[in-house]
Image (cartoon, rainbow, N blue to C red):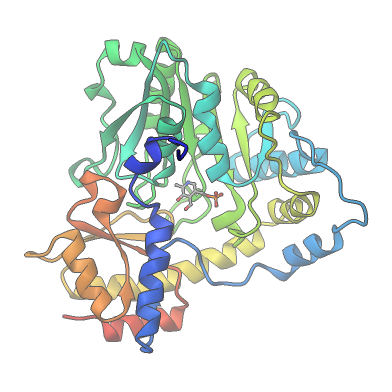
Length: 379
Ligand SMILES: Cc1ncc(COP(=O)(O)O)c(C=O)c1O
């Protein structure tokens, strides 16, 4: 007799990245040039000073990293938060390292979900991990739609007081993947005031907060009291370190204390040498400025082309372009049409039903590949 396993696994669609990898392999077999705007994993090299910090920190003896991470890492994060957002966080009580945002987000409902208040909310469309984290923790997943006509901002008034009272967690993400939309401070003020009134945890996922083209976006950590708030940041996109797996969790000291204790059960601090590289990365802003410039150049090339085609593009945060498909196409059919020219994008509905009618381009190919993709674009 075979083991029954968790039936949830059979119900979940294949994870986005796995689907994209399969699509890339098929396109690569054609032998023609490939323009992969699928997964948000940029090709620019990780800055040499970060790689050097990692190499030099590989120690002779390997020991378990602590859940709280190196004090120097927490201090580097606090210094970054002070430079970037004029915040003063206590590195010992308000900051915890994590092995990338995905891990921190996935484990959060295991800790913050109270079965007496089963509702956990996440955006539609969204990065897929929120939903999966909720379902694996046996919460009741509820989406809130993000629509172009509301500038992809959640409508907090659409949730009833009774629903708020049943809520354990609200996942929030601005600058938003996949739409690139930002949120005004008033959004976070209202959300946090609801969280304190009704007693739920707000998780603000902010891995794109340093990748902007206009004015720098705020962090939810800047909105007055941090009670009931957890913010999650990552070096993946900011510093070109997707493979290192490093980020941090910051916010309400009571929640941070609980997380520190609970996270010890699954042991997920980054390796010491990754923490050393992370210290170097958080201590430097110049390389982030250079990355913003690289993405801005790609954005200019792609935007000019998409506008010429008459396609509306939303959002100016993160490194995504959220593009409305031409009349007569669906998300899937336009993505398939582009795939015929070996231009790989993600169909908007892969991020949730409200993503129908859009495709997402991650500006990860090099600038010259972006220019070549524009030439290869089917009209
Ligand atoms: C919104 C969002 N949150 C979190 C992550 C995961 O980041 P990390 O590489 O730090 O796990 C991603 C990655 O694409 C993302 O888009």
